[in-house]
Length: 339
Image 1 (tube, rainbow, N blue to C red):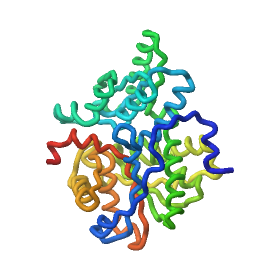
Image 2: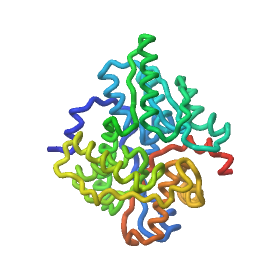
Image 3: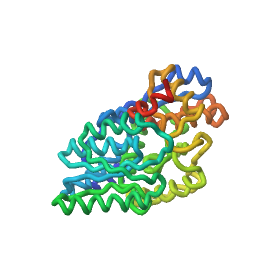
Image 4: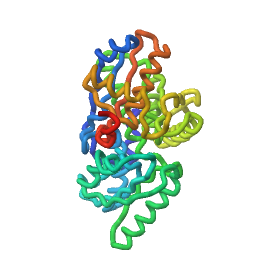
């Protein structure tokens, strides 16, 4: 059976510009003085300034269209990339959009709450709802259902994108696709990958990419850098998501629990908060490769990659891939801390 046969069982729309580039980073590699560093440019998916959520939304909105929904409802942090891309995807497909912004990051100013992704949410014409809690996924999802009830009462047909653990991670299939795409690109370039480093937050991207690699016949280790929860909370979350994605894809043999690698060494002081390692990562990639990261996910993940290299985790001749999941609009919400 072909690794792509699972796609026939799921509705899907086309939103991402794929395949996205797989590029060598020669200057960044030289600056770190360790393994050969590559980047998978999923910041280049095209939808409303790009990012990884375009791949996930292809499956969520595919299901929405198959159900004849006319309105999308989603939740996320104030500077959520998922929310921004969901708003753009809904508009692209001629649908209404309600977004719920959760207050996950304390101590942020008005610029954070009005610039970056929030500005784009409004530009896209989203109906914005504010949710004062930041760490209660079940409550956030329940609030989405209240919004859905309002939409139905007004004659609409809502589709809710739940992000909590009580709902299947349909969007992870987009990262099974990304992993299979990456394996094809590496083979075409004559490149043998030795490790992948990516952000581990909701675990949708992490679980999808890991399952995709194994489904494609690759045993490459995947290092998840914690961006929201500590490793003790994140590891079982990733494992649960992996099992769910395995079932959706129909993977032949279950992934070993030892394949779940998460590291929270660069998480402090918490989600959406900068630290010196994150600032270094932002500046280093910009200065060496002209590559822009975001403060919440990709810069924290790149700080993790830099730290793993400095620890000696990888051989000097290894080929290490960084998965760039986008998010650059959030930079503008942090401009006072970065200028």
